[in-house]
Structure formats: C-alpha cells, structure tokens
Image 1: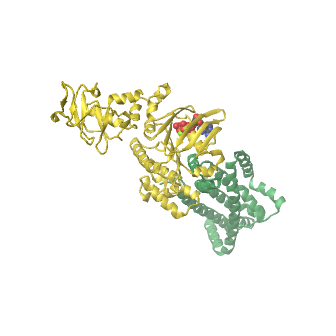
Image 2 (image 1 turned 45 degrees about the vertical axis):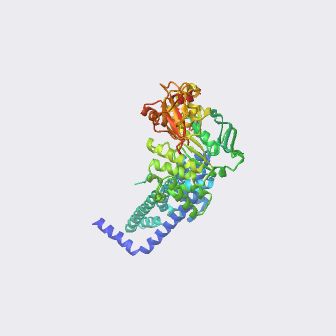
Image 3 (image 1 turned 90 degrees about the vertical axis):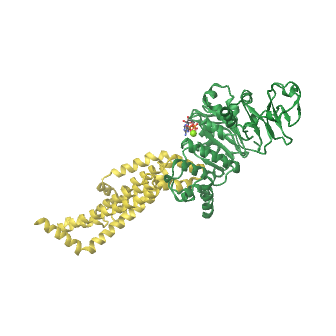
Length: 221
Length: 364
Ligand SMILES: Nc1ncnc2c1ncn2[C@@H]1O[C@H](COP(=O)(O)OP(=O)(O)OP(=O)(O)O)[C@@H](O)[C@H]1O
Ligand SMILES: [Mg+2]
C-alpha cells in the first residue's frame, strides 16, 4: 500500500541520510542556541529595566508586541534588503520573535515579588544590587524561566523558516524534500522536527520544574 | 528608665499626596525602653515606624537616631544598625531559615562560619530547634515564622529594634508565650524597642511607655497607669472596659503599698489610745528582725496591755514586692479579704496593699 511504502521511504531516509539530517539538526540547534543566548542576554535586563522605570514599560512592550505580530515571511522581506541573507538576519528574526516572552516575564516576575518580602530586605539594609540579585531575581526566576522556555521552543519552530533566508536547519530538509518531490525526505524532516521539538519542550519543562521547586513558593508539594 | 535617648521624633509628618497620614508626631525612646505605638487600623503606626529606618522618607520634622538626624546618615548603614520585624513577617521564601536569620550578616559580607554560628545561637534564643536552620520558611508554622522574624532582627546585634505587630499572626496562647519570651530576653539584652500593636493588652504588657495614635496624630503618651486614667472619650473607648485590669497587671504591688501601719513589737506594752492606731482595727506584730508574726485585733482593748500571743492571728499568704497589683487583687478576691501583706524575699514585712490603696492609686 502507498502509505506503508511511504513509511519505509521515511525510515530509509532517516537511516541512510543520517549524516545529512544530523548536520542540519546541528545547524538548527546552533541557530536556536545563539538566538536564545541573545534573547536572554538582552531580554532579561530589558525586563528588569522596565520593571524599574514604569514609564518605559508600556512603550517597550508595545513596540516588541508589534514586531511580534509581523508574519515571519514579511519580516524576511524587511531583513533581506537590509542585511542580505545568511545567519545574521536569521538570528535577528529569531531574536525579535523570542524576546517578547522573556522581557514580559522578567518584568512581571520581578513586579510580582511580594512587597513584604522586598520591604523586609530593604529594611534590613539591602542596597539596590543586593535587592535585585539576592531577592528579586531568585524569586522571579520561575517566571523568568517560563518565559525563556517559551522563547526557546518558539525559536526552535521559527528556525525552520531560516532556510528561506539562507541559513541551514531542519527547514532545509523539508524544503529540499518538497522541491525534489522526495516525499520520504519531506516526511522524515517533518517527523524529526516534531520529535525534537517535543523532546526539547519536555527537557525545558523538566528544568522548569527544578527551578520552581527550588525558588517557587507555590510548589511546596 | 535611665539612659540616653536613642530614638527621637520631632514634629514628624508624612504626606501621601494630599493625605497627611502622620501628623506632627513627637516622641522619644530611651535606651533599654520598650515604647509601644498603638491605635486603630490605618492610624499611621506602621508609617511612623518605617520613617525611623527611612523605608518611608518623612515629609517634614526631624528624626534623630542616637542623636543624629537620619537624613544625614547613610540609609543602608542606618537600616543595618536597626533590627526590623515587619508586619507580615516577610521571611525570604527562597532562603533557608539559617540564611534568613543571617541575611543582614550576608549583606554585610560577614564570613560564612560566623553566619552559621550566629544563626545557631539565635534560633535557640527564640526557642526553636537548631535542626530548623536547614528548613524553608514554608515548612514552619506562623508562630515559628514569627520567632524567626525576631531572630533575624537580632542578627547584627542592633541597639534598636523596630517591631511591627511582631506577634500578630498567632493564637492568643502562643502570643502570650512569645510576649513573655521577649520580655525575658529584654531583661538581658536591654534593647531600645519601638513596638507597634493594636492590642491594648499587649501594649500594657510590653510597653514601658505607650503612645496612642489616632488619624495620624499621637494623642497621648504615658505608662499603662497614665493611660487608664485618661478621661478623653476616644482613649477611653479605645482601651475598652477590661483595660484597667491589664494595666494593673503591669504595676508592682509596691506602688500601692501602705507603709504607715500600726505596728507593735513582740512583748511590748500596747496602748490602744496611741495615735498611730487611730482608724485601725488591727495592729501588726513584728519581731526584732522586722519579720511579721501576725496581726492582732485592737477591738476590745480597754487600756495599755501586753499582747497576748494567743490572740495573734497569722498573716494571709503574702505578696512579693515584684508581684503585680492584678495578682494581689485576685488573691484578695479569692481569699475574701480586703488587704494583703507584702513581704520581701528575705521575709521582712514591708506593708500591706488593700482595695482602698489600689483604688486611690487609680484616682490619683
Ligand atoms: N504607600 C502609600 N501610599 C498612600 N497611602 C498610604 C501608603 N502607605 C500607607 N498609606 C496610608 O497611610 C495610612 C496609615 O497607614 P499605616 O500602614 O501606617 O497604618 P497602620 O496604623 O499601620 O494600620 P494597621 O494597624 O492596619 O497596620 C493609611 O490610611 C494608609 O492607607
Ligand atoms: Mg501597620
């Protein structure tokens, strides 16, 4: 039957072309790691900043929110004329999509630290830095981490489109499979992408539990 | 109370926008004294307390800590030198009990070993097992958390403690226990304490002096006894009906002691017409060491005579000078008599207290 035949082709592809898809997966992961690093390094401080300076809060979140709603191909339409193709515009695209949950959660996480806890720390003589690093960030960590998890998982799927902007990744397998009418390759790429996304999400979910256990108040079970 | 003034507020006010939540408040707290601030909810107690360590900056007036204007001190250093127990405990949920207690020491970058030692010392001071040091706040009951809150405030051995309803979140029995422990501790540590509460019993029990606040104003300052004698309508209704008994609980019997008593020496000749017996039905019989042997009725004595040892009645069980008037009154009620002897620890007869002497104390 046709479908049985398809799964054999998929299996064949996965087994025989493992060198190729593993290297594509590697590029994909690398792109996501880079993008996630940028997202965290930029997003968390911005989140902290707008939690401190309330007047910046709405403008920043609005601008990021608008960028976030641009469809991905539309964004490429902007980036290619400006930056050409390759890794750099891909990273920028991923950063734009991933940074919103990180900024928002960092800001909300810090804002939600109980005022009485902060007051106790301040009353005991914590200065600004000590308050941030010893009280606010640790207590906001579960929320911040949830934002980071969302960003990474989203970047992992958005990175599939990076092939359109000339950056290799899992999207390459799917696109090539489509163009060459190689349905084994196409489905294999899709399956691999789905499986890795789920695994990644599970892994991050597990890490998130650990963080919550350590720093969260509500997970006292 | 002797000693220097540790905390002083001079016409201090606080505005939030147009709202004047603290209105020209002035008071001082002496070294080793517990000064209680009390008043209805929202009257500005917490705000007043927070201005002392500048968590809330004051709008006008002067606040002096150890004689120095707080606005001229380094705020962080000021706060580190003042122990602070906040109204809702506010333990840091992500830190162990040890790290909570030693938090100020961490901020001051004291060595780890010292932090551990100090935490061990303090957890015992507040009556919790050392094994709790490795727990997290959520694993403690409300009362235990309040004890940790007190231990934490003591960590840097501050001279001044600010305590905002430190025993607010516990049942009456635990509350009383914590109060007694703090009072006992205070005997040795002799801190200068500003203590906020809205429980008048607690105020009378804990406070050397009490300040009553209303709508941002400090309406009166005085000892428990001063306060129950207030005639002001608001104060009377605020302290309520039974308050006089709470106040009497804070006063030692020596305050109502009658010393000018008709006394006779054992074996001496007694003349009932002697002026010192005027108005008395009894005389107290003392031996040569000033110890009381009992009392004897003067009724029926016609002229000078020796006391018949047979007629000397033993004294009821006495009060000690340190006992409270409330305790003495209770004994009088239970013993169905209008007076009680007061005898020193060494057994010397000091005098008596009576319903009459208590009443005149209140009337004074
Ligand atoms: N940050 C703030 N901004 C505006 N108003 C405030 C602020 N903090 C306190 N207030 C107001 O100041 C008044 C006094 O508050 P405060 O907390 O000092 O009362 P309190 O006497 O401690 O009451 P409670 O017994 O309920 O703790 C209240 O009316 C309160 O609403
Ligand atoms: Mg209060």
